[in-house]
Length: 362
Image (cartoon, rainbow, N blue to C red; front, side, top):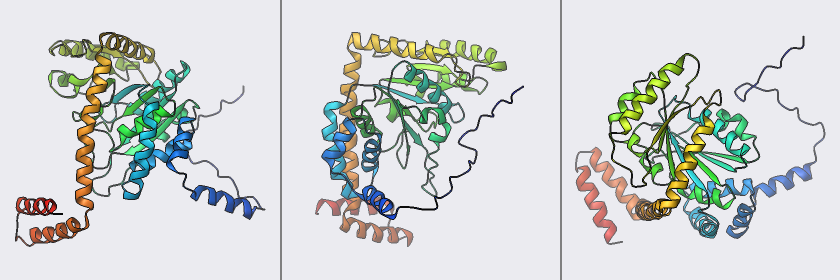
């Protein structure tokens, strides 16, 4: 009887490729020179529109950069891509750590691509408040989806952004839409009840829950559940099926406590097992029903318009903040005020008032 090959994942170390005995130095130098070359905004935009994944990745890197020299180029790319955007379905997915978001998104993404969809996953990883670093390991978790030609996965660090998304997730959505992706999935950091920002940039908000985790009690609280358009009880397999069914009943009862949504949609609760790839098609059916209803009653376009208004004010706030802290005079004055606070010669409130008044005269 033939031995079955063991499944190997990206988590296992693989034997590397040995260096060739003879290398062509001219080709190596040519390759390095090509990689160092920085295409202009027009060229990068054209490549994005034609579906070039490398160009898309480079553009998102530019957009996410905090380097002031990159801002103008990134803004130009976004402006040129806008006319090719707004033609996708945007889905936000959140849940507590350990609920299986990455496993679910991989199964969901595989299902959607099998239906002829082009899927972009914008995964947000939490950043350390100490080292400021982030693992960005979502591609490792979604090994099968990474190799899917109709899928694109971009992990980003949350940085100091609140609301479960990265600082430039909204702009990344526009770039992915311009590249031809018709389904955009945003995976939040999963920090519980603060996923408000992602709700303001997606069409459908899916909340993943676990049975036997005390989550049923969250159903009677305002917050993230109030924003959810559907709740999926994940890991509904094996010995956990009975508990998952009970959790479904509890959440259905809790959802009846909420007033009717502005969309006219009644949130649904369903079961799924991302590991076994069960119930994934039911979730897509729910999303499709939601899209049909909201596009028919006009809420879909209304919601997109309100989201754009919200992001206008958010962008203004961000630009004012960057302009303030990047000003050389403010930088020097801030350092002085911090030292005064450390020496107990001023208070944070007095220092803030001084800096704000100083900014008015610049």
